[in-house]
Image (cartoon, rainbow, N blue to C red; front, side):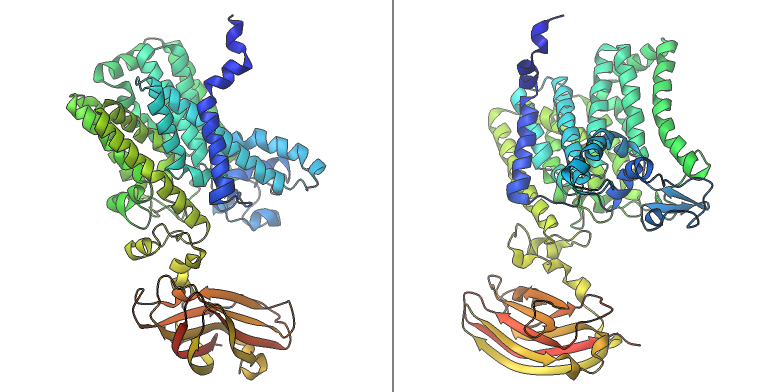
Length: 584
């Protein structure tokens, strides 16, 4: 044994690039994008909940318990448990929880000493999930480096590709904001699978075949649909003779072949056992109300739409065409056709899901798992280009990093809409980070149909001209002067203005007792949120203040409107205020 190879400094130096990238990511999150506290939510709650359900609450649904009966209130109240065949079952597979489990154990052991309860969701557990996402991102980057080395990519280009993988894609969001989602873990697993599969086709070692089967089982456990990765084997083989020889080689060794199948089946069996435990069935459709529509794939939308299009929100992946061009130029038609065929099949399947935009998410998250598919031809193409075109492609790829960082920040700060973007909204807020744009593209959600509401009171304060840098109360109305005040749920304010994009004025509505720090409602809307026909032209704008739902309002309330002006004189014309209640 070579003792020198075991020195910590030698080990550290071999991972220095990946460590530097992860540390840079933490710096960017903490100082620019912004750290978050709630990382176990939405789908992530389902992927994660196997751990608290089994090890803390002992309330994972059992096959003998039906629907709501006999289930804990915790399980009944969680959306990640669906009713299937008269049973409650966790909709999500268990692989993510399995990979998070060592970090969960650390959090569970340390929570009391840190002053937190062992509930599976307090601060130490959320930090543990973040640490898990960072670790598997780090591991995925290591396998990406190993994979690209098999293609004889130089170290500097590999490091650049790793930077792009983290900072120019949705990975940065799913490490920080939604660490419990499966995508970072699937990125790690599929990258590892690509590496061991490629290695097998190069040397046909039995150990690589066994590893590929083990990782393939993990891929199933993380997200069963990702078994599609087996269709990438021709591309990874690189040629038809290599593909053929690889399959024949393992088939000639039946003991090794069956050992690999047994490893694959054993890991997959974990999920089957959990389904059996919860429903008494080995195979379960945990999405009974959602399905694929293979006769209506949203093929173009999933790639190019402003709503969630892959190449709109992750434009760096478009540069993979440089590698495809290289394959054609070098007459590597098998590489070109096998890559394109896998990409088309993958896109066809992903775009056939009824929610092709995959719910509330940043970018097209379903492709995150398959990022190495894009980075192989990208790295190959950059390496093959002459120096000047290479520099041009590198600069263009690098330019996508700040775009992605800004859009990630926009998503976190409610500037970029979760699932309802279109061309107009996208360009209205493109690269805008000013918090005046927070909620700007969400305004449609706050509009009500006034024809279906009850008008309680209407007022016309008229025209106002206010100097810059001041605050003025333009309305103070006792709540008892509003007929049907208890049913009040929306206040519409309309006015005429030219809505200059640079305008920094804001209008706040507040419902509270006089001389009190308590309030029933308080919301400040930037004036630009009132525009309805575009910026920099005179128009009638409006904004709806939607009240939060409260059973008991504070007594002796007053409804007040406050206008804070920006850097210029503010002119508002024909101000109208209408208060609406819900119909009986």
